[in-house]
Length: 309
Image 1 (cartoon, rainbow, N blue to C red):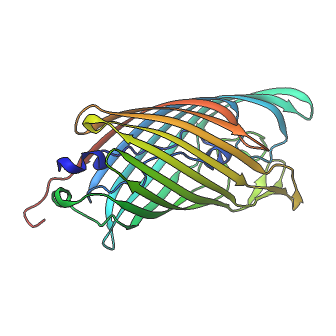
Image 2 (image 1 turned 180 degrees about the vertical axis):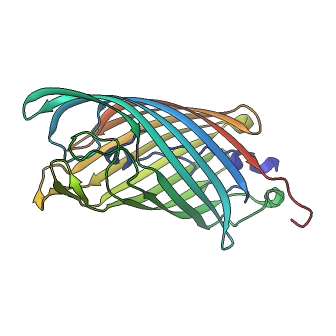
Image 3 (image 1 turned 45 degrees about the vertical axis):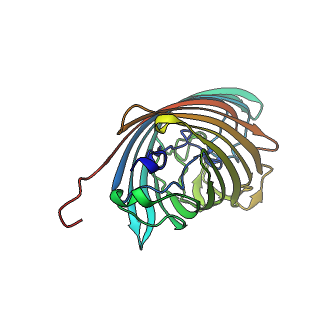
């Protein structure tokens, strides 16, 4: 298995900022990496961000400043998806934050703590990444890989319809994504195209109905393989869309923003990995304008093969 060490030591990274405007450009390198069927990943992460972060771009707040702490717990498992390599994962975020800004021209501030919306995802690679057992990776060399994923964000987070700021969004969100990766000797280049499709929030602040148009995102990752299974990545993403309508009245809140992130992942040993990342967001129209740092830990394991495997 030495030839595939840099492939199977994947980090399950979850962008640790719990807003749809921020989630629109999750910068998650190595999502297409092929790994042996039956591998399990447990993930714990922390991120701190500060800047202009709102859970809904249609909120009537100006000059927003947020100090947000996010805790993330997640589990993923690699599967055989009809002969193709695939993964399923579950993400549970918890947020603690302080918001300040101007509401109708008046300075205001508030704090929130609680669970945000839970996420589920199914992903599979349909090109260049067959479903393989760990023993079969000796003869596998990654080349060009293409894959698809569908993530579902469920309205399970803390939500109070009489409050303007909430950790949950009170709606379902569906995120289909297509990706393509080029594997070279020391580099991996990845590109992704995704869309965020929102259902209506029929109990928006003040008893209103909030509807968002889809948001579209493009991402590019350059990943440098290092010794001992370590790696470094530079990532960029751009998102546009999510125009909001409150009771069918169009709002001037279309998101247009870019994200930049640097990531370093370090193998402690065969099963344990640490990762640190730094991220910034720059808005052109609306959207999040922030800086963030994150630290995460991953434990990975695979069941021992049985006699009939």
